Amino acid sequence: YERVLSLSNLEIDFSELEPEFELLTKIASNITKMDVTLINLVDSLTQWTVSQQGFEITSMPREECICQYTISGNDCLEIDDLSKDKRFKNMSYVVNEPSFRYYFGVPIALSEGVNIGTLCVMDRQTKKLSTEQIETFKLVAKELTNKFKTFHKINILQHELSDAIKMQRKITHNLRDPLAGIIGISDLIIDENENHSEEEI
Image (cartoon, rainbow, N blue to C red; front, side):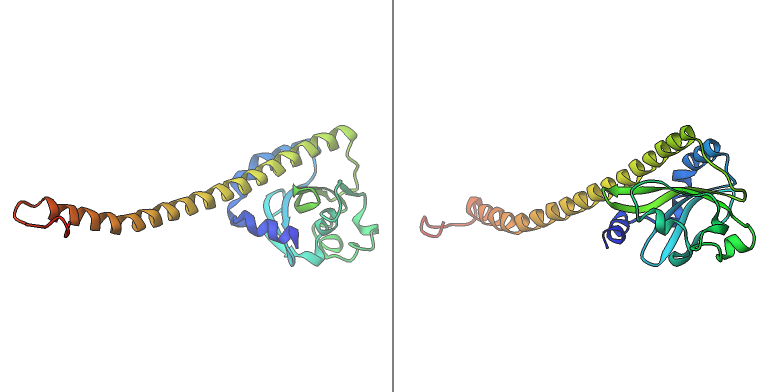
C-alpha cells in the first residue's frame, strides 16, 4: 500500500521519464556489460519500464516480472540462471526469445522499506558480476533514488505554492469588499457637496 501511495504521490507520467534517466541507464549498462539494462517502477498490477537499454519494453503484468521479488527485499537480487529457477523457468522471456538467463537488480526506495522500483540488468548468457561492478551499480541505483526523491520534493513544493496562491487570492478577496466600503464611506464624508452631522458620521 505504501509503495503504491508513494508512486501516486510522485505524480509523474511514466512515459516521459526516459530523458531523465537515459544517462544513468547507459552508465549502468557500461558498468555491467550486460545485454539489457532497465529502470522499472512497480505498482499493484503492472511493472512500468521508464528507461531501457538493449531491449524495447514499456510494461508487463506484475505477476510475470522478476522485479516484484527485488522490491520485496532491501538488498540486491541476483539470479544466475533463470531457466533453473522455478519462478521464472516457464516465462516467455526465458523459454522463447530473447531467452534471458541472468538477472541482477537493486531496489529503488523513496523511504526505508518502501521500494517503488528497480534498476536491473539481464543477459542471454549465465554470468556473474564482480564485487566492484556490484558496488558501482549500487551507486547508480542510489543516484536514481535521489532523483525520485527530488521529484517528490518538487511535487510537495508545487502543492504548497498552489495552496499559498489560493490563500493569497482568498485574503485579497476578503479584504477587497470591506476596504471598498470604507473607501466609499470616506469619499462621502469628505465630499464638499455632502452635509453630514457628527452623529451620521
